[in-house]
Length: 291
Image (tube, rainbow, N blue to C red; front, side, top):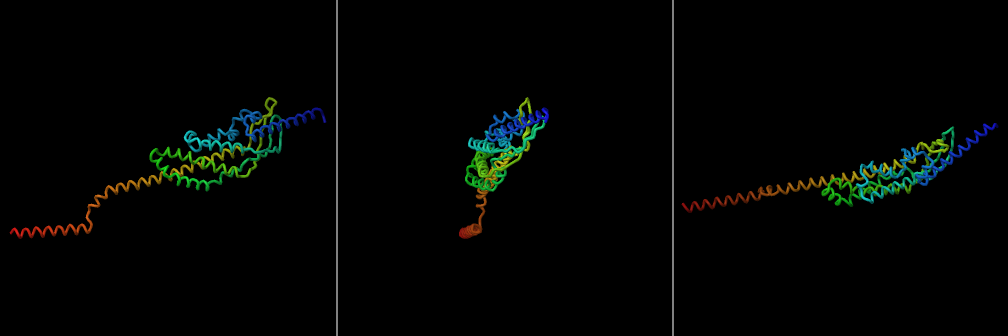
C-alpha cells in the first residue's frame, strides 16, 4: 500500500466519521426538539427552508388558523391554548428516536440513510370522525338556545366565534387522545450533507415524512374543526330560519283570524234568519193593529 493510498483512505475514514458525527448531532437535536442545537449542524438556508418549517410550532400554528380561515384573535384564549398544546405535542413526538443505517461520502458531499421512529402513528388522526360527530351533536343540543340567541342578537359572525372557541378544544382534544394512545411508527429518510469550510453540514432531509406528517395532522385538525363548526352553524341557522318562518306565519294568521271569526257559521246564520223572521212578524202585527 502506497503512502498516497493510505492518505486517501485515512481521509475518507475521517470524513465518514465527521459526517456521522454531524448527522448524529443534527438528529439528536431533532429528537430533543432543540432547533437551536440542530442549527449548529445544518446550513442557515436549510434551517429556514420548507423542510424545517414543517416541524416549527409557530409555522404549524399559523397553518392551522389559515386552513380554518380565521385569525388567532378571533377565538378565545382557551381555544388558543388548546391549539398551542396540540402543536407542541406533534412537534415533540415527530422524532422519537433514530438509527443511522448507512453513510456514503463522495468528495465534498455525503448521504446518510436513517431510520426514524415517530412518537405517534400519523394515521391515528383519521379515526376521529365518528366520535367527533357525536361530540358535536351533544354540543348542539346543550348550547342550542344560547347559539340561537347569539345568532339572533349579534349575527352569524358572533355565533361562529363562539362555535370556533368551543369546538376547537373539543376536536383538538380528541385528536390529542388519538396521538397519545396510538403506537409509534417508523420511516426511512436520507440526510444530505456538504463539506463547507472544512465542516460537514446538513443541506437537505429527503422524504421528510415526520415533518410532512406533522403538517398533515394539523391540516386534518383544522379541517375537522372547520367542518364541525360549519355543521353546527348550519344546524342553528336553518332551525332559526324555520322557527322565524313559523313565527311569521303564526303572526300573520293571528292578524287575519279576527276577520275570519266575523264570518258566521251555520248556527249564526240560522240565528240571524230567525231574528229577521221574528222582526218581520212583529212589523206585520204592528201594521195590522195600526190599520
